[in-house]
Length: 582
Ligand code: ASP
Image: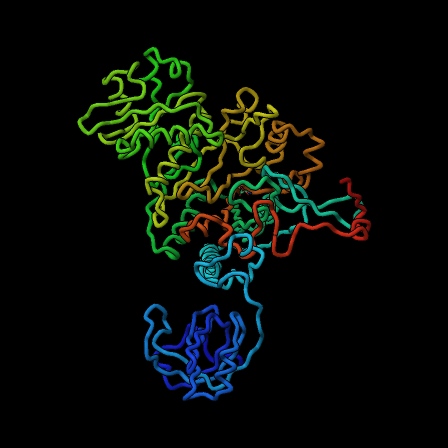
């Protein structure tokens, strides 16, 4: 028996019992006549004591020679500590060691195994197995496990069946590039790893499994913007015989359940706003509604004077920054520089101070009088003491820029509180999105998403106006889930493919299996997928998904611990019938 108890378990009530513990040497303190060792495992830390009055000289010497992270087993008895430590649950006791076995030695770890370690990110990733011994990482993994357990519990209770779908498949269009896997047995042919199990879950609906879920890896070969992973986990779900309303209710239920069970937070019915409203009010289809600062469109009250910057703009739009009148001139200039950074891309920013006495002072006083500015304040909801920040230009770009500013200011003002949760549904997404570069439309969600009833005809005349039965669940400024009601008949699906630029032959080659299935009694169906990594990070009150993934990849998609990706040798290339052109 390696252990009778864990290192987090012993309390006053165990005093005078004999115990066996195993774990890692966290720290040793040598006072000459007595040596203390902090023994650590997943559950906590227990203090061991070796002293010259009560243990043999040999045992004391052996304790003295223990290095950090040695794996040891001790037998001894629990005694009351002379000086108690109320910071840890085992702080009232210590174990007087009678027998010590070194189960394994350890090289000195490259960084300290402490909550605040001296190891930088790269080093910690290279030795991730040591990083996982640290409380913050360990606790995140335990937290993640708890969330997934609760997800399974809720969905099972609702009658969902967990079904696994294959990883070696062919392309699923979720808008990224595929990772491909060469097939040794099928010369010159490749599998693609799923960007999501989308088509399979739809086929499960045709198969009659009317409530499916799966906690599943998805693979997308995209440029890794901040905090994305090439492989990530989804809670993937699909239901048959449902309308949008049914799906929203079930998954609002799941989210509410998680917030309650995991965070102890009760939330009301989630607000629902349309995509168009989200863009108008927040410049963003995943708005953070923990705070206000809603957009006020100022075209009507700012395009009547000689200020051509505004007059020539498609949109003039502002936000009121609470308490922003307290900013110094220098601070406002910094904000202006911030919006002019290439990442944001605004040409400039107009501002208006709302003084406590009800008067206004703007950067464009030459053009606008107090009466004009009072209207700006009204439209943006600014109160005395606030600062109005105004951007102008092409509608979509300007909204995106102001949204970036809104988020930055909220961050600076401490309005994005990690223990506050503000979920909402964004509904009625456009079906199609114009790719500026190619001039072609592509599916905003994916090609299996159904248009709103009666809008199919619009596809020819005004494709951008077609709205979809598609929805996103947004939490604290993050899209944590997205889905749609699907097309379930061959004809509509063919029309969609045609509008997405597929020839009938291409559509058949890529998705013939799905179109075939639709001819054998496909039920109406729809679903959603949650990004589990992000959801867990948000529920855990943290920012980076990497911190909740046991073995994440870095920003270049590399696993620096196992050093992947890596070249393969010629024999393996030959076996796969591959030749490299490098
Ligand atoms: N497959 C979709 C995605 O990965 C989710 C869905 O439509 O259910 O975003």
